[in-house]
Amino acid sequence: MKPLLSPLVLKDFAVTENRFTILPISKEGNDFDELFDEYSIDIDFDYSKNDLFYAIVVQVKINNSEDSPQLGGYSIMVEGTSLFEFNQTDEITNEDKASLLNYSGLSITINYIRGFIATLTSFAPFGRYNLPTIDVNDLLSQKRDMKKEK
Image (cartoon, rainbow, N blue to C red):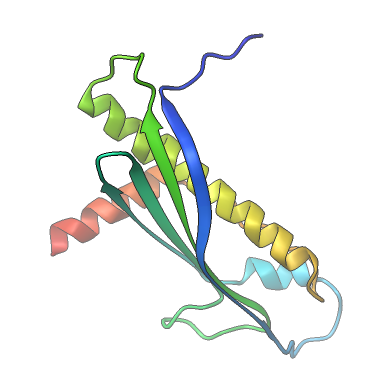
């Protein structure tokens, strides 16, 4: 099959901040996946635009929350920025642009961060950490609710 290309074009992705700490583990055994499943995950994101690009900045904190105690293993914070533009040959409404950025752009950025974290931790003593799949609809809903509260 020949895929239809999206009018949303990823121009670049960069990790803009990264903190990775290895913490002592208090329990015995080698089932780190169980430990990883207990990690708190916090994700925040924001959008900006200039004359050239749309930027999506995503910050992912794993076992690094002020609201919950840190467990052993890994403590990770990664901030990444994706730059997007829209294909000029496609006529696209502002509503469609917003939808593409919200769903596709945010998902793409999270997936790049997921890959970065997997690569980073693959060289660490407790093995690779795979960021679980994220419900982007729920993230967007939480973000809308936070903005309403302000």
